[in-house]
Amino acid sequence: MQDFFPSIEEARAWYLSADLAHDFEHVLRVLNLALKIAEKEAADLEIVYVAALLHDSRGATPGGEGGERMGHHLASARFAGEVLKQASWQQERIEAVQHCIRAHRYRNDGEQPQSLEARCVFDADKLDVLGAVGVARTIAYATHAGQPFYAKPSEQFLNTCERLPNEPHSAYHEYLFKLRRVKDRLYTLTGKQIAAQRDEILHKFFKQLQAECEGEA
Image 1 (tube, rainbow, N blue to C red):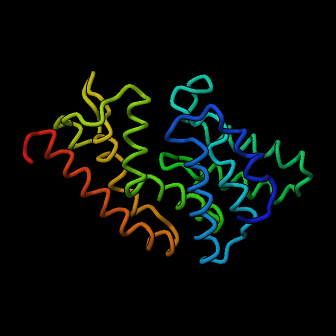
Image 2 (cartoon, rainbow, N blue to C red):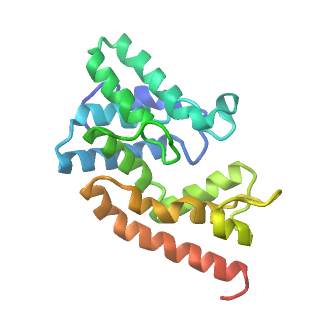
Image 3 (cartoon, rainbow, N blue to C red):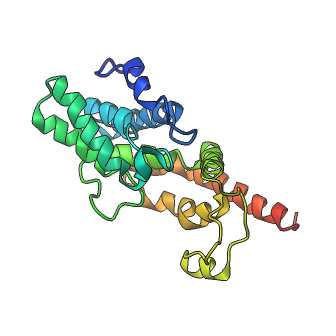
């Protein structure tokens, strides 16, 4: 692991109350992927390292921090600014880290990843919702939010991704709504190469889950 500030153990303390889908193990996986991508893409490793460690540091848990998960990228970016300012970082590099964090969300109508470093962090975070880990995280997230791992989607949801009143948002709904599209949203060549096999695993699992739950297999 890179010898940058903050250390892994220092960062671990920021995630003590995180849910299973956004815990420190998720952060470490994103960190390792982000550094792997950054090395291949010749990005600034220090910026990527710090942004990956801090990207979910505030408000990522469903219903946590006053129910503000939808703004956790903004809260985490603000927290990163505080941490790095106390460490006497240059403002330009603080802003580079904050951009990475603000731009890492999939559901983000605002800031998009413009820098190479932000694209490395974005891709790493998205890769963690693909493959076997992606399946496990999606089911864990649904369970934490009180949703089933499978519910048959309505015709309306299949056509528009808009649920009917009282329709659950199961892990399978999340696959249809988001996960099956993630591979096509990645930015870096390295990220796309890693995604290929993980995406195949994801599709096979949810196809089998649907078949078993509907008595077809």
